Length: 259
Length: 294
Image 1 (cartoon, rainbow over the protein chains, first blue to last red):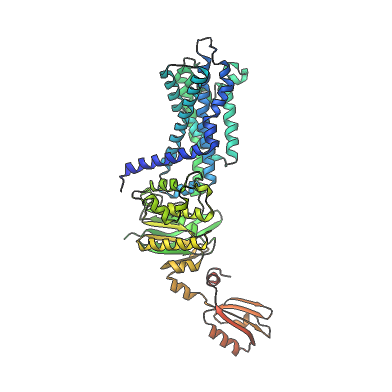
Image 2 (image 1 turned 135 degrees about the vertical axis):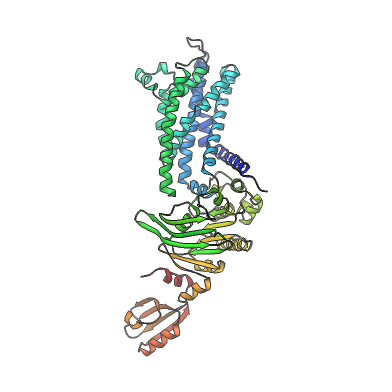
């Protein structure tokens, strides 16, 4: 059976994505951290205050679900790509792929699709957990908006993840990802609302990509503190920065390994 | 007809090391070529240039007449590399299925797995395979797309006798089916058994490109060893067709293609020869005498 070029490309993408999904699912370091960790954290930080309402009437439970949703997606992107890519480089899987007819773009795209599927799964689990265990409810259209914005806005973190994956070795990658992501997540109010953080942290938060990313989700609930335009402006800037970093790191690797 | 592989005055420098120093090579459709040479001779670098995994620092490399990195050329090749890993959590079957999807008209999954002799391990994860089984997996990944050309870098390394024979039989069958095959090895015996053309590469230069018969005629086929009552030196053997001469105390060992001529000359020169032995030279040892110049 012979496939035309476009169909062949689509088939490659599907098979590659299937493999990437299986790989991520079968490695507990990824699947458990990606899917279970946000729920565990939400249980500690979110559930106890789930039924309180903010001054503006927004449910704190929903607000924190959105925050932990942002945390979950960033987690999938930064750890998934950072550690995943670093490992594949160490195992020389990149060399095998490089010698195969698989176009590098399809290889990357399959990773992005896989990460988005995991991010979606993590968000659905969080929202479902919030509804069943915490009794936190919002109209489906509102959750759909929160999820759509969090997935679409994850681009800068995909780029950051790739950059970490190409710049660090397999042993350093988890530490590097933690050192970068955990302070970002805390300072941007993912676990504790920004208003409750120390003053200087609040001042810094305004400049962080994660802060503006979470604003996308908070404002979908009517609890944002900046316009959508402002959030998108910041995220676009950080996307450009991280993408530049990722491309430079990728090129450096290309020169060293395949030049 | 466009050759499958072309290297034109190809050079490759890694820092201070010139791994390839101007290699010219053309391999046509249906050829079965062995690239032979000791470790570090430039075999893997040559394969890397042919496949576009590395860019030549000088000269040119072409695959099916185009840039080797071109997808059109790649989808006509199956590759087995020495230094490459597979995702350990995927099973043999899943990996073969994945690699089949990269090619326009692949073999059935079961056929590719059977050809590599991995039926019993089809549902085992790649990470649980032994070294030899992993080599077989790489072989399955190379052939599963039913490509026109195969590039096998040290395909039998780390395999047991049975596995080795299976791979060699496979290569023979694929060649008989019309595939173009390039493989590297550092065993002359392996190249001799399989290939109709042997390219000997040493220190980044092709030092021979000929049939196995011609190659073998160039290397010393007999080993002569004897004891002598009088001290001898290198000068004793001046002008004689000897190689790998070792003189230690009264013990002399050497390789030669013309043992009768050497012995006659030694008797004429008055060398007292005792405990004479003339045996067939170990092929690998003799081959090394061709590649490692003093």
